[in-house]
Figure 1 (cartoon, rainbow, N blue to C red):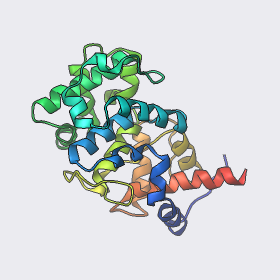
Figure 2: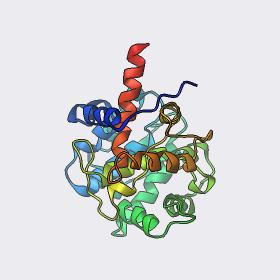
Figure 3: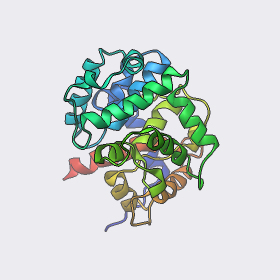
Figure 4: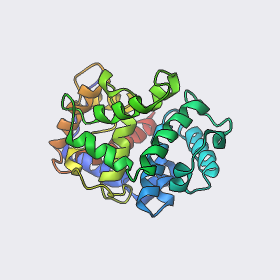
Length: 255
């Protein structure tokens, strides 16, 4: 592998270039951007994060179908959810029963005057082994009827097994940061405490840029990359998620 150590000036320019309103239209964050009420935004964001994997154009179409089913009323959809509403809706690993399980857990949560924010805040305030995601995934696994199905385990990775928690990190970025792209509607933690969303693309670029030395794409690698990004901006390290995206775009353009 050829290592290219990136400078703060270079990575800041990439972050600034790609963290714009124009970024929204081709990203899953475009779905929660349809809404203005806090609970609608956080529910739409969480649902969008569940299927944000695979080919972007495919999962964005699937999200449009799902939110048509929800009649573009996320909170109302969850509060009144019944499995039959989904019909045969599925996406790759996630089958109708997997989506139904997650939505039923969310229905119970919101019907009891609680919210996703409360679950994430609890994880933040009560981390296990310094990992805030363990209490969060424990909650979903404890309340699922079948927590061993492939689709459920893929959409809600078990943080106890060292998962990088890519989509939950992305979802947290949306909810906590305030920017042209992110909403900043949760204030129980600071942007400085967020984690970089890590997938194979970000991992490969991070190694190439000298930000990651570990071979595994796990939560320990998430911490290593995030700590290195804090050296560029200690107050807002995950803004460089946009720089990673831009670096990949530029790299592909040169091929």
